[in-house]
Image (cartoon, rainbow, N blue to C red; front, side):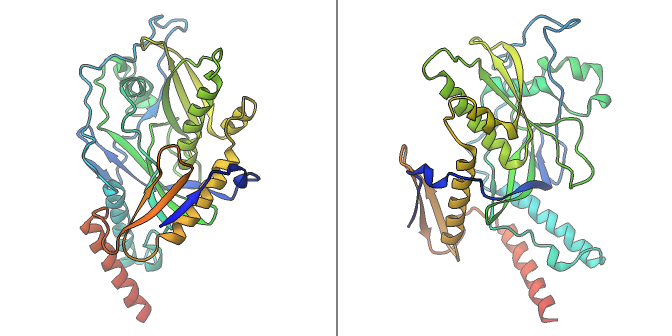
Length: 345
């Protein structure tokens, strides 16, 4: 067993370690019935904020609790492991193999390589207010391609968490390379055709109005900012739109946050957390994880509540703990055979 101790956060202070900007190279969708569609942008949404309280619009503030009775909630008791991500990586590599056969690609460029392949973390329990805010804030197509009904009748749509668009990006933190997949809520405008151009992703959040007049108010607000920043920062999401609501669930206003500026905003507040420390701590843990999890077997990462330490425990000497699908393992074995054959000439 290996233990990563972070009881002394000052050891991670200083300038942040190097980080590679996340670049999307793949994606997948779940449709309205939560059927996986690898390399499909079917469920990509486009940001278009709800209008209320402005001249020429309704003064009625949207009720974010609307749709509770008809909410289509997917069964999140089913552990999907890395299925969506790995199925998409497999299809991505298979298409590159087709290009190898036609002479458009080199075999050495087919395998997607990284020290760690994982999900950024999906918000499967965000709740009705958040999902309804998403419904009010997105369109199924770019604005110019939408009908007036699609734009103006969003509040009456059935709330569901079945459909998702997930981005797959290459990045690195310190010396650790990563393949990260995560759900993104919407894009502002359209995705650029040039893959080197940053994508204007938008993360959508809802929150009760912050109360800075209580002793814990500022700290609670900064804790939320930490969650917003970490989730968006990892996948390269530049904008966060927070819909603030009343106690009875009515939308009061929308605040736009720039992901990169959140750590500076916290510094000007009570400075309850430090962005550089977060990044350096993450880099140190990933380095330890990379050095610990080697060879065959299954490991478990665990942390006891309120304990400033993370344990990495080997729980099986062989196998993959049913985390890797048999089809993906067979695909990689065939790819490895082709690579060995090419190396031997």
